[in-house]
Image 1 (tube, one colour):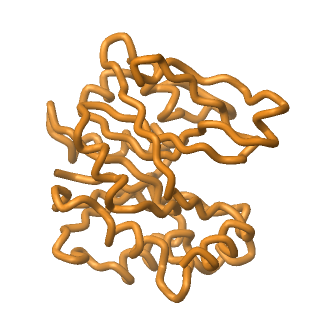
Image 2: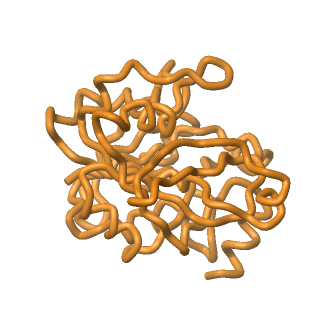
Length: 225
């Protein structure tokens, strides 16, 4: 099975660090984020398709074409925009009917929690966090994805369920042209939601997701490791 890792972002919130270092190569306790991601992939994952663009040669040089016996194939994001645009750049490498795991190249997880996604045809990762700029994830009583909404003032302070950027998908996702979000980008969570009537999406709740999107996140991650 393949894992698609979206690792093309410029990391603007981490400048000037990311002017010379791509986000996936940021060190957490002496080890690059991308290595921590690859080390915890479920055993069923034997190939990684990595979408790259910003400082891409540094990522390729660091990882090569194999890491821990997992083949790595690189795909340039090019002019594609947004998370679904990044996934679209991999379409030719994913066969009809194929299931695959999708992760961001700047987030860390636990192997046990990622393993839960393997049990579903389609799955959508969430975690309770205090992150006011994210959407609250609405979940049906049966545990399926229902929708998104802005957070309430109380949720912005106390925390709520937000998307972690981990998904189990299949090639049917490419039947949709993509949902446009801010700036004309194509959003992957929004596109997944747009197909919920045809392809129900099981919500997988985690507790060990560690995003690395800011200097505060880096400090937090270093303390945790």
